Every structure is written in structure tokens, then in C-alpha cells.
Length: 377
Ligand code: FE2
Image (cartoon, rainbow, N blue to C red; front, side):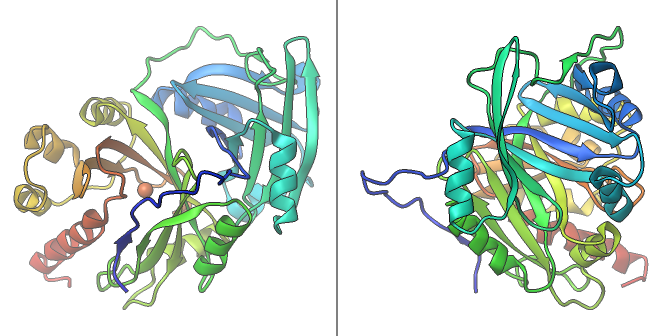
């Protein structure tokens, strides 16, 4: 099987999307210490304080910090006591993504449409109200312990949602140009990619727009398979990875071992100027995967003309790939926890709608070339 980028199909005029999505509303992380995690994301990634919920707002069991940068919103939640679902999640998985929250025009309809198609309910439609209006939310389970919440906020004017108050602080480091969630990748177990693809197709009305088999994404040491699922308007994209057999342990298998199950592997965030963003992020201590200089020797012949100078790309370790529609620039952080689990991708798209397939091979081959030079291959 070859990599396929499916051409958009003309839809019948009568077609209506049963799960219209307006984009990612927020990503919620369950973490061991939300106060410190919020400080890390503000300091290193340039998020701004937005809202807070905890004992001071009448919530007894947890504390949540909401941080925002342009259209990118993270919620960092920690339990205040043991023996509850949040504490158990952290015990099992370490820090990681619990909620991929999607903005919808109607959260009640989203829940009905998905659960009648076989989605397992996580949260029945619930209305939260305060003097700023109301939020309706509902949710279903996806892979592992990860969930999708459907957030309807058209009748809400407040800072985040009822139960939260504005988080005022004098510590407001400048942003780093991160804009919104481009895609979120899930790692699933052996033989679980296709069942999960079916879930996104049948329960959520997504389409499989791109497929990588193990010949595309394998070197001798790091094999995986991946299918990219997209909703109708393309605002929400979820690539799904499963491990593949290689000479050594697949990087997906390593994740599954340390996360102790399926979960979010990386969140890709878009920037309009990756050189500026990554310069900022590196100077603030964000650690990125190092790319061997050999990668850049073959870059011009592989991707052709690009607007950016090669020098800063090489200095920062930014990768480039081209598809039929344009090119993209991307870079991957190291895991942001001690467990080798969740990491981030910074991506700038210049026409390309794909995910950097050329870099999977180029990156791993370049790495192995370096290994060979050292006599370690
Ligand atoms: Fe990605």
C-alpha cells in the first residue's frame, strides 16, 4: 500500500455534517502540579494567564489553570486529594492530555448524534450558568482514557466558563507567536489503528485523508503506521499511530509502555513565523530534537525553492517538506515530562496540507547516517 493523499470529494448538496465542529476549544492536561505546569507553559512557551478554578472559587477537589496564546487554550488540572479519577489518571499515565475539547454549535445534538452512532458517553449534556451566560458541554470517550468534550459557548460572554474566575497576575511573559492547534496525534496499540479510524468515521463523521504504512514511516529502528482523520471542514485533524514491527522497539510502543496505554502523543501548534517562534522557544529553554547537519545537505534538491534562508533553519533544527499544494516547516520538542510520552510540534504551513512524510524518512535516515559515521549502526 502506498501513501495516499485523497483528493477532496465533491459532496452532494443534500449532505449535512451531523457533527459540525468549529475547531479545538481547548486541550486539558491532567498534571501532578498545575501551579508549576502553568508557570512552565507561560515562561517557556509564552502562554498568558486567563482563568482559575480551585478552592478559592468553591471547587474542593481540584485546581485548574487556564492559559491562552492567541487561539490556543490549555487547561492544566491537578487533584487536591488522592483516590479520585484525576489522581488515578496521573498515577497511571503521568502528566498527559485528558481532554481534546471541540467547539460545537450544539453540544446536546453532538452528544446525541455521536452516542446513537456507538460513541461511549463520558458526560451527558450539562448546562453551566453564571451571570455571564451559559455553556453547554457533553462528551464521549476516545482512545485509552482520553475524551472529547463538546463545548457550546455561543451564549457565554465570560472569561472561560462558569466556575472559573479571571486569573490576574503581574507575571506576563510575551507570547512566542503560537496560534492554534493544527492537529493532535494519538498513539494506539497493536492492531488498534483501523478500529479507531472506524470510530472517527462512523461515530464522528470524519474522513481518512492520508495514510502512511510501515514502509513510509520506518527505518530499521523506528517503525509505525499512521492514518490521518479529518472532520468535514478540516478544522480538526487527528492522526492515529500504531506501532509496526522493526528491528527494535517502535517509538509508539515505547510511548504505550511509559504512558501505560493509549493516549495523545503530540499536539501540533501552528505559527506564522516558525523561525521567530522557535528562536524564542529555544531561548526560553524549550528543548527540541536535534537534526544532524546532513539533513540540510540534501534539503534544496528535495524540497526545491523555499522563501526562508537555510541558515536559521539549520541552526534551529527546523525540518521542511513539500507536497502537491506547497510546503511546510516543522520541528518537534523533546517530551515535556520525564516519561518519554507527550511532546509538541511547532508547524508553519505554506500551502501544504500534509504532515511532513518526507521528514519521517529523512529524519531517521539522517540520524542513522550519523550513527553509521560513528560506527554504531
Ligand atoms: Fe504532527
